[in-house]
Amino acid sequence: MSADLANLGGSYQELARLLRLITLVEAGSKGSELSASDRRFVALSGLDPHDSVEVLEESGQVLAKLFGSDVNPERINDAAILAIERALELSMAHGMWAYVSIQSHRLALLLGGVGHHERAEQVMLTCVRAAARRSDYDRLVAGYLYLAEEALNQDDAPKGLDYLRIAA
Image (cartoon, rainbow, N blue to C red; front, side):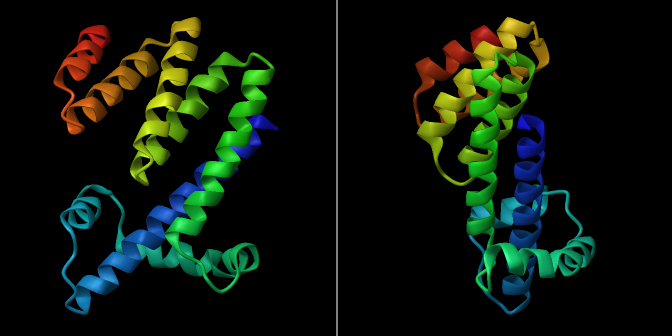
């Protein structure tokens, strides 16, 4: 059940990314000035607007049933966060550390992406602890690199350098 909830959360997360891309492309085509963050998202997302429209059209009825007429990336991300948090709770309660490291990593990235940086840091620390228990060095290093980047973005160079040292 934990894996199913996490997969549902991941699907919501991807649909929110697609919807955000389409919303930004439409705004840009109408002459709206995109923020630096939005321009970066469009440039680095790796998403194809045409494919995104197709997927969203196919998912439209289901999204409308789940979210009503106010379907937007924020609401879908909120649903993704709830699903992944519940999956993580179940995994932690049953000591499924491989799932804990995967789910907490995904959740931390999602939380950070929507601006919940303090919560993302706490969840990423859960990820690195679980990854260490499993000797999952790829996720361990990725987690510490994320923490280092977040610390440096918050102008906390000593903390960022500490995380970089641990990652190395």
